[in-house]
Amino acid sequence: MFGKGTKERTPRRKSIIREYTEIIAMAVILAFFVRTFFIQAFKIPSESMENTLLVGDFLFANKFVYGPKFPLLHKRLPGVRDPQPGDIIIFKYPGDEQTDYIKRCVAVEGQTVELRGRQLIVDGVVQDEEYAKYFHGSNYGPFRVPDGHIFMMGDNRDNSADSRVWGPLDKDLILGKAMFIYFSWNQGAKAIRFSRIGDIIR
Image (cartoon, rainbow, N blue to C red):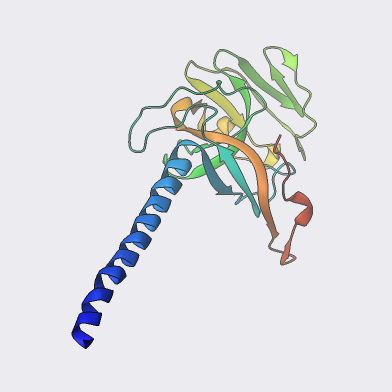
């Protein structure tokens, strides 16, 4: 009697383990699919995008808009549109193609970019940039952005290593477009910045 009861319970136990294994496996596959082709989370580590983005901001990036890349391949699915001036973009740092960077696109291929003091000039036109932060200002260019590249700059212009330092960004290194802040932590105050949660990134 005892032996029979044991035999009846074993298949049920195996069935439950199998069900949980399948659920976990599906969740992992789904998470990988979403992260690869649609949305990915990023954390702001530096002051280069102040005051648009602060150290400790956590954000989601839309990977679908520019066309997601296949892992380990230099192949990209068709995107909704190309990067445009003003877009805040997450990309792989050209220096090692491993580290995630975030900057603002200020010019695209074929355009000429120039910085004079505190004025950004694109194709001879002074840009209205209410988000740009300067302490002193500097001069750069003029520089024509080559085909297949975009020109990236941090909003904190005097405290940003960007295309002025490492050159124009190859579009193949683009990961996605910043969407919104889902969490923000002020390390100095040891407090959550509730007012920033949910902010659309522009």
